[in-house]
Length: 100
Image (tube, rainbow, N blue to C red; front, side, top):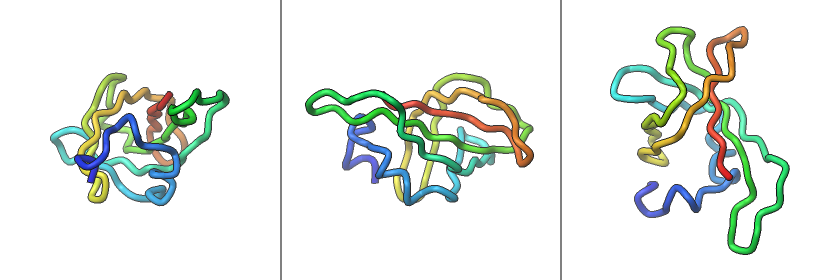
């Protein structure tokens, strides 16, 4: 569970096994699926993680505006992530969270 680890210590490798799983967004029944974990260009300094991003897909409605949203996952627990809508694809609306 996340309570044992801080959000700042999570890496792309922590999320890779969760691709294809659902995260509940907010207090309502809205659910999103983690569809991508991407390594980003950039070198981490000593003691810092390499930058990465997560891409989630949710339904087209309800639309979730850019901002900090609480996500819940059965393995990770609760995460407060800054989500940015990056546009729809053929299956729904995509949102990205970037970790520096």
